[in-house]
Amino acid sequence: MTIAAILIVLVAVIAGPTLWRLAKPATRTLALSFCQLGLRARSRPFQLRSGACIIFAPHQDDESLGCGGLIARKRNEGLPVQVVFITDGGASHLGHPAISAGEIASRRRREALGALAILGVESCAIHFLDEPDSTLDNLVPERQAALIDRLAALLAEVHPAEIFLPCSPDGSTEHDSAFSFICAALARASVRPEIWQYPVWSWWNPGLLFTRVLSNDGCYAQPTEDYAVIKTQALARYRSQMEPTPPWSAPVLPPRLVQNCNSPREFFFRFFLPPPGVDPARPPVI
Image 1: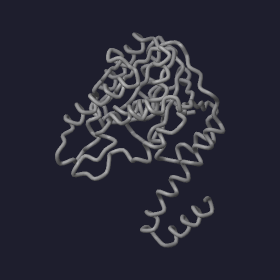
Image 2: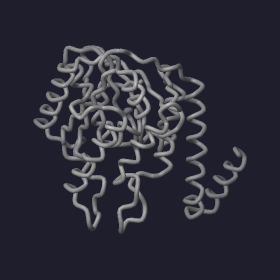
Image 3: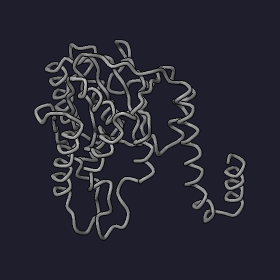
């Protein structure tokens, strides 16, 4: 398999861009399989904590893709889970001839409520901050400060023992910006939870995961077999993302990405806030 993939890449490079486009999916699949094996080898078992937990999601579906098994497991054991959606998700279908951003935002909110109900999260524990999707990396300073204030207020109110937020970098400017704002809110709030990163779009970018395999000692894995059906059902509620929206013939989310996120294990990476004096809005990634 490895030799065959190498030959495909070599032929593609020699033959030109057309064959490279054909070889790229196979190369990505092989690279991601290697990363998954590496993460499994480097990881330690993830242990549940009994305190309150907040899952931060830039968009409606990130929480189920990255943490669906964890959420289901925590709720099955009666542990409190809060979920915070930072954007309204309205930019997922930009350019669609029949669906507006407002319609997509409303649909994704309904889908999120349905998915989280399946995972066991009560509606009173779900927070929609409704920042316009695809704007987090361009917010004016006043809007940034207001968002950080809202995040800090939620942290102070819930006082979580641990939080989960998307990896940085994760192959998405929205995810990276959300990470920065949450870290800034943590530095401002009088809470010091354990901080865990979860990958989503990293599962479409082998280079990002390969860096984790090589350099990150804080990798933990949680088997999701006992909650695989529940997680799959929750993901299925995100029809706007998982299914084609005619006249578009392909779904917004690549099926292979969803398959990678819905694997037998969820991976989490321990993160520590930078020391005082270091800008918390752009913390280093370990």
